[in-house]
Amino acid sequence: MFQKNMELELLIEDMGVNGEGIGKAEGVAFFVKDAVIGDHVLVKVMKMKKRYGYARLLKVIQPSAHRVQPLCDHYRQCGGCQIQTLEYKRQLEYKEKKVIDNLERIGGFQINHKTENGKQGILFHPIIGMEEPFFYRNKAQFPIGVDKDGKIVTGFYAVRSHNIIPSRKCYLGAEENEKILELVISFMEKYHIPAYHEETGKGLVRHVLIRKGFLTGEIMVCLVLNSHTLPKAGKLVEMLRTIGGMTSIMLNINEKDTNVILGNEVVCLWGQDYISDYIGDIKYQISPLSFYQVNPIQTKKLYETALDYAGLAGKETVWDLYCGIGTISLFLAQKAKCVYGVEIVEPAVWDARKNAKLNKIENVQFFVGKAEEVLPQFYNAEIDADTDNFRQLEKELKASNCLEKGAAISKGQLNLTEMRHPDVIVVDPPRKGCDEKCLETILKMRPDRVVYISCDSATLARDLKYLCEKEYEIKQIQAVDMFPHTVHVETCVLLGRK
Ligand code: SAH
Image (cartoon, rainbow, N blue to C red; front, side, top):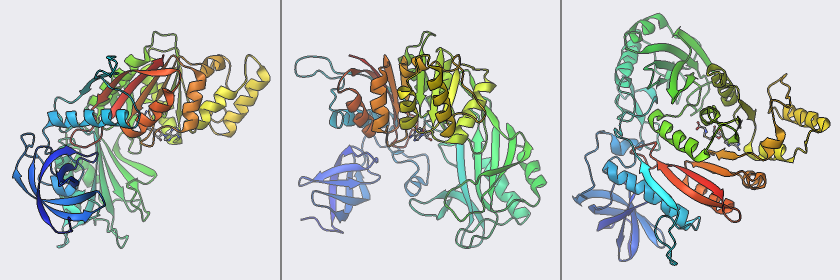
């Protein structure tokens, strides 16, 4: 009954996982990008499926009471923010609902409200939002190109394309970004430095990466080049040094024909080859290639929740799986006896070890490898003071590159009995969640508490269901808004024995 190009009016009654508005006509649900809950809209049908359809927003007939004017003029073209037109308070409600829906639908849990037999559901704390939900990102990467008239431009790629929409201001990023981009462009214009051209692979400057330590105020600018040399580099340094907080001016070399922004090589033009920043009391050195959480203010709140849930008194042995550069591990190490981190990306583990040294934290050990392989490796090691087995394990760890080259493990360093039965296991997996082998091993290790940090509540719900089939139950849940104006939401869950 509905066909492509038909126009119809809808009342938007819900919002989908990607932030689209959902309205029904004659029982058929339509997904409408850029429509918000409560809007009365005119749409055009774009595509019909059996039981639902996609429609394009033509006009907001009666705006929702929750609709706000977006700060950014490019909001609809960019796609970096999906829900900027929804009042921030409602964004938070939307995110809470998303997490709760997934936990109930996929996980089969009862959250917060009373169940049929009158029992209270699982404790779900109100989501932690931001007081100032703009300018929160400490990292930005702007593409450089030329427009139709050959003028150098920077901005952002239009949704699903590589066309640069000129813009120097992003309301999620640091306020200095605009001035920095202005200087880089005027440097390129003045000294005839060409922008990189994706189709031909010619030209020089591909991207500008800007990082800022929000607590230290230190700023790094890194130009991504299609070559090893930047002509007139001294002039660029002169110009950029005028920006308050500038401490690091770098080049990154990427000569490949690829969508990946950064290459592997970095060169320092001026200042230090890293910036420093803090999360809580822990100091981090961040280079152009380092992974680092993009919203440090909310990250601190998330880690504090994780630390609180871990319930550490100083005697505990803790595993931190999917540890990245060890941010959570170092946070936990301050209150634990020993923390063991596992991470698949080797350079991230180098950063983790470096950051541990920087903070003089000695009760942490990091292993390179897959959580689902490293954890069983330790669990299955039959040690019990048997020296031969201990050496065998050491050999295996070295062979699988888990242990630093030349490193030997001593019993003082790794207490294998405690590692096999830790007090707490923390996991912070990527969106696809944990491998079943990893979850299976967690259950075998029988920790008192599991703290699950997740950036995808659907896989979180799936994994919690697995963990809660027998011995464990959810004690409490805290969602944190790490990425205001986007649909993403971070969740921290405490599991304990029943
Ligand atoms: N806990 C860190 C990073 C979390 S992001 C922090 O808060 O900063 C998830 C991390 O898991 C990434 O660093 C990714 O490289 C790593 N990872 C992905 N798959 C993995 C696996 N199978 N085993 C171990 N680590 C993995």
